[in-house]
Image (cartoon, rainbow, N blue to C red):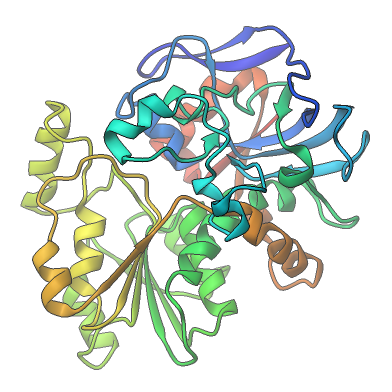
Length: 388
């Protein structure tokens, strides 16, 4: 089969690789009908997350049709159209049973790579380094899905592929970010980053009862999406002092909840950003933390900061601000299995339509060009979808 493979920093190639096979009786083989780029993929492409190996297949946000079923699979069947969360989960361990799906104890065979850094291993992820299991990714014609009865969700009739594909990762991640904020009626929620995850966090915040949502970004096309599709008020951080603007918009108090949806390659206008660029280039730190530091600074006293961006080692972390302001900091990789049914229900009811995130379409063979456009944000690119 054909697949989009990582071969080194900024080196993606479409190659012929072996077809996946049933390894465990709980596996299915999926014919990928649509997969999409994700901002966290850029950290792999740019070489900021180690343990990638030449030939690894990229991609973790996808959907498809089941074409082969292992003998122990009971709930899903051949021919079904399904969407699959990016984290691979067993459904039986303590963490899965407590809706902490991305912390699954049983799906990362390379736990020894994570334990020195995290203390404990997390769940496996498709196409996301060998430290997260070394699983083949979704930018391919076919993919093996372990624990299929737990991790495959049938797509209802009437829900399009363009709507369903973002229920794999961007939707659950954004909604989890809003959920972590424990939003109350009347709350003001500020979201840093108007990419796919940030836009889903904005819509999730409204669906969970927020009165106001404010989007912070620098790209006009993304701010336009935030205003038109997510009904957010918008701030261009290159044109205003974000802290002063948020104070003015909230009567001096600040947002009740702040959601960081940018991660380790954040941009910014100040000296701290320049400092981060230098240290990241020299591999003295892995993260540019401008957006996260700003979210912590801007949140009202006693508020909640929800962190969705991918981070490694961040310098100049403002722990004193968190402690003195009495902030609650909450974070996780996405617990997709918790949110996918709810999100599909929102789509069926017409309350959510994430298909607007598709700004470019490419064949799988054009994968390297798609990622180049996505990385450089060319032609208003928010998300590229690939159709194998």
